[in-house]
Amino acid sequence: MINTERNRALLTDLFAALGREGWGEVFLAALRDDVVFNAMGRSPIAGHYEGKRVYSEEVLAKLHDRLFVRPRLVVDKIIVDDDMASVRFHSIGGRGKNGADFSMDYCWVFRLIDGAIAEIWGYYDTGKMIDLFGDRP
Image 1: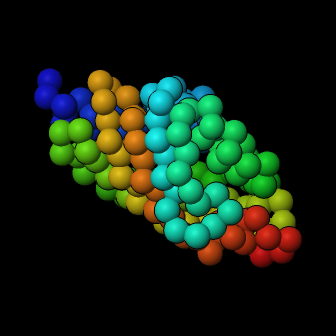
Image 2: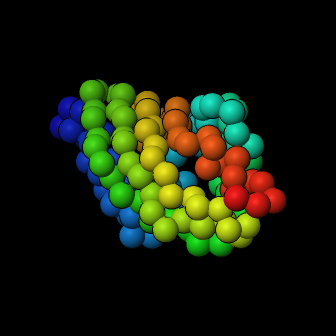
């Protein structure tokens, strides 16, 4: 199987699982240990994170701490070309502990190596992220 087909299957299966189970171990298992995550824009989590542990502690844990209701993910489109891919998706039903609406649109660009996610550029609604981390929505 060429990289495009393998990588499409990986992302399709991954995002189907994320839609059912939410962010957590299934997502972390798809990442290389040396993954690089680039949270684009200006928000409390924007930045460049190197390594699965750093990403988990500096991004995922902070998001999970702020969420009262975790959003459900819905895939809109997956585009794959060899080792590069983009996934446009949205989330519904997310709510912060502060009452902020955390349903939004995303576009993530991936670089995949040997069947695992090596790098992510995450584009999202920075305003909603700021609201989630604020004292009030």
